[in-house]
Amino acid sequence: MNPFSILTSKIYAGLAIFFLSFSLLQTVRIEGFLFIDGYKETLAKRDKTIADIAVAQEQANLAQAKLTADTIQKYKEQANEADIRASAAASTGRAAADRYADAHRVRADALCARQADTTPASPATPPADGPSAVSDMVAVPRKDYDNLTANTLRLDRIVNDYAAGMIRDNLAVPDVGF
Image (cartoon, rainbow, N blue to C red):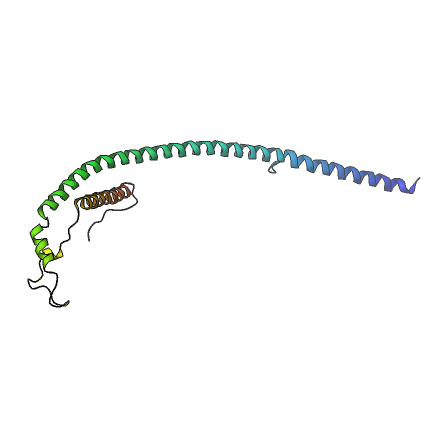
């Protein structure tokens, strides 16, 4: 009897057990077993998750596009409303400014009398007739007055429309006047 035959059979048995264990381990890793997830299950879950993410992303893109379109439409409607209000406010404001200008005109005789007496006794003393309302007035050409009126009305409309839009969009609260 060969003394190495017992050793050889044990080596072959050990190698067989090793390869069987290795193949069992690989099978469990790939296929899974009981509570152990295999690669196939993991890959299937991953693929399903990726597909779900792609569907959710498409739905989110559609929802965002709808929200953007709704917001654009809302802003267009607000702009149209503001334009309608602006034309009415401009004519009303222009009429009020014209009434004010007609009621508070600088009289030519008062302006000429004031310009004739331009040499006061000393720079610190007022003129002999004393301060008057005429001395505080400034004469402005009608074209400049019209430009100032138009700019004031436009600025008032812009500020009011902006504030109303902020309140309407719940980005600001109206002044409660404490």
